[in-house]
Length: 307
Image (cartoon, one colour):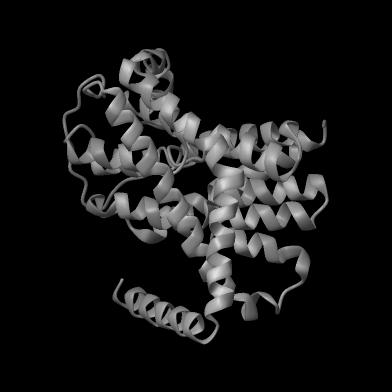
């Protein structure tokens, strides 16, 4: 982590120097990030965040998740809580699953090993970003948005099964109850939480647009056809935008599936920040995201044979 901290400091200094030397270009790139957020993410994701927070507060999602608690517990070798976190991750998107997993561990409801297993399938993007922003917005096809979403979810399920016997070096077994308890939120709380969440997403997208621009000299060494994918490994919104504008539809669908399932460096950093107190190895979480991306892309390729 110390070496990573030094590398990150050097990179940030490099970006600052780039911004000082070419302020107009980098101001425009930040604006491009906010435009991408406003046109492709905000209209789809904000209403969905608001509505899912209401649904969660009312307790109906918890009731629905209970139906699947036993099969999910057996399939993934995780506690009943995993079903609730899995469904909330699917409908809410990054980084909700990581945050809920960390919260369960910190509240003493799951062990460290169980938390490690849960991150393998409870770290997913949501349908409004995949189907709405990427499918309908970027690829101009809701159908292919559904293909990506189905492949993404199935890839997460396969990934969870792969890590079902994962153990922690220093596990600490905790006693957990049958379901997580949450106090219902007021409409005011839901509005504020939704607004803060979507503004945080805008900030991250804009910052990583700037980061990607600073890496342009490196990206220029690669063929244009794979630049979008490389950008997506850093920030998924920017990557998917460029993938959709460069590649043929089916190939773009495959590339977007890989990028979204991996999550991009920006999303991984968000998740690792929330998993910090869990002391989850960075390399393990990144490995889980890589295998998720591989499984989802394979599933996507199979589905595309029939589309």
